[in-house]
Image 1 (cartoon, rainbow, N blue to C red):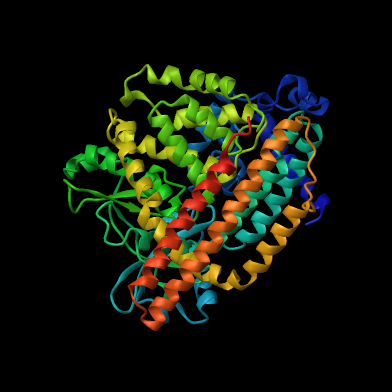
Image 2 (image 1 turned 120 degrees about the horizontal axis):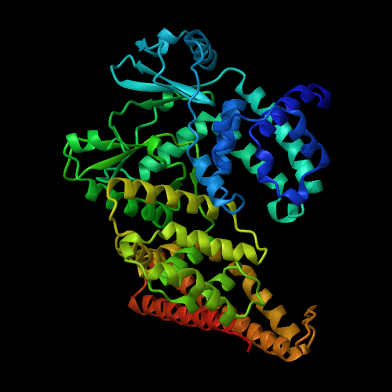
Length: 558
């Protein structure tokens, strides 16, 4: 659609935003003259609307703009690094529920996806939807083998509607980029790109099926979480078919109590599940609000959750996962100096930040919380405050970290709904410590080595020549370092540490290759124990060399 064709829609959006007085979201110093004039020309809002907080007014405006903007608001609620807390809290309450589209259109879309009539794939198909949202709606059905399933089908023309509204958001992002004083920090184009990416992922129901399948595999035979099976023979990009499950919505406390569910056990299990997904599997359900969580009533004293809606999932880069886990453990132990050090090493703070000042800032954030009983402390709130502290230094956190924080907030909310006095800290700490020991223990190290040995064997033939060239350049003084620094003595120490670390690393790689070669000889030729012993000695020497290299790399030059 051309820019001129967008004008009526843009004017309608502007009218709704001003009618709800959402110009209050813009600082008075930065309002344009046109925006100020529109307040005079357009009708005043109803007294009931004008009295509402700005977050609730924004939620009402997005609801009036339509289901796609409701989805935009839900995605924005995850970006608490950009939104004021009161606005983000209001947006989390947005309900993605819209009027269903006709069953005839749903049937037609399913038949187009399959290329056959719907009766050839399903023994029964209910025309009345079980649920209807902005992207898709869900119908009950039965397979020919008798299994009960649910069928999720995309709304007609939803891709075109998303395209048009995203184009409008890009135009708004252009204006924000041009006129907002903090545009570099807000990065409006990146925010719109993130929203577009999330929506496009939700349009691919086969991707959602893959998410559900992986989560189900991670919790196979689990007594804590059940994930419905994906019926892959009936799933396409536009149609997702899942095993039908039944349960009690997690926020229906009366029904949970009537079923005799142990809510305390359930709340603690929910917290443990979050840390298991994030730190054991590195794959977590990132839309874990009460509407997407049911409870299986089959075992009231040992209840388990049922997960629904797998359109938004999260995972962290391995580096961020490591720093996050170490920060959590330091936070559990109230080790402010360690938190400050980790923030710098993780790149969440400038490398030239003074650790003593940073430790004081962390203490200022955390200490007011630790004066309360642990059962009253919100871990998600503390993490959010620490992230906001990082943002004050004009550093940008990865969206997945913000998504994780929002998910933690949801999980804590569900936990306190089920058990208002739950001690999040006491529940989470042993889980994270146990998982982290397993992730960083000897078995994990050996598993990682087994995975990497083939790669090392592949590059082993090139190593002698590379080592020879490096040593020749080092001893002849031809190894060039093109670095500029104001502190030459600090630079000299850094270079010296780097050279020693490189030498030990090279020696460690050499010993690793030797160990792998000897192990291969021992297995393939059935050699005696002396060859195996030599392989183990080389491997232990390699570990020692790598440890020394790592210590040299991490050593502070001052």
